[in-house]
Length: 347
Image (tube, rainbow, N blue to C red; front, side, top):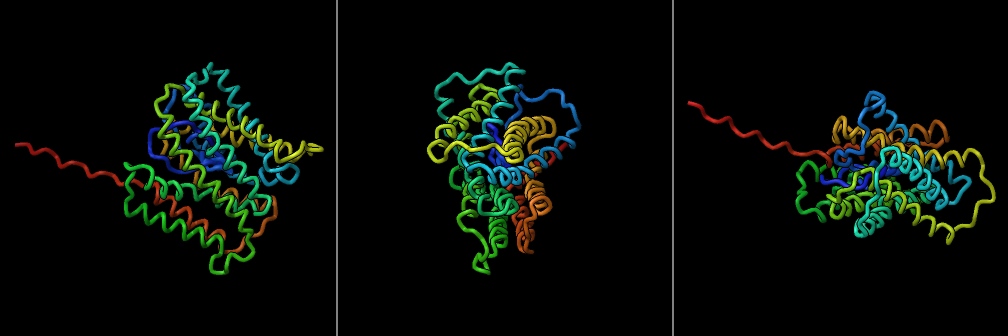
């Protein structure tokens, strides 16, 4: 996810999500929307071990399967416990990467303060909301809700980012995307058969990502720290937040069943840790525009995984609405190419 991802800072206009999702992520998020791609950083992989298409496919699968892993984890653990385990595993992966590359954590107290807020909106809050949502809604619906992050981002950028003026195409995409949401939810049937609270939590999780991205853009650009150092520090703070909150709402697990435990560990190590490293490497190699196309594969994979492996049922409006949501998200991320100046007259 978001979806699932989690970058730390970026200077360009935020776009698609979480699986999952840190600063910048879609996170992805989790169950995250993929985060907006960060600017190239010296901390990113320098010599890719595999062709970018292979890594692109791996990233799509990892984030797409994150929603299934959340569902399996919540079968045995409380939602806050799933989120805490996810963040702990993801932080461990990035801590190892930072140690290998000899990255230093930020030293400014101001930066740590901003990272604390970013960790809440890009990790702790959306990851927890998705985990709670999947106790009452199918993983397929959660994956489709995650795809609405670009729509929320477009709507918020109109208000919060004065330099990000909408075009007619992007506004049309916004309207089309939310029409797709209503189609997924079966609005003409009065939302019958849906758990409204679970669906609302999944949509709020998707809204949390662009809020975090806009905050990061305004506060963490130009800190001097590498993207990897900022992201690792952010995940650490998110883990700390869940470590403080989880005991207040849950008791220690009586047992650790093998499959749910492995699902939570994989959710963090792969969907939150490794996925971030893969995404940053792709951004550096092929650019953010192509790299963030992974966003459009996440709900497709999440739906296929939920139906094939969890036996979840689909009505016709769910895939149809998902296609409309993705089309709207694509339009909201389009940019008008400025016209080329006329050639200079030569005698």
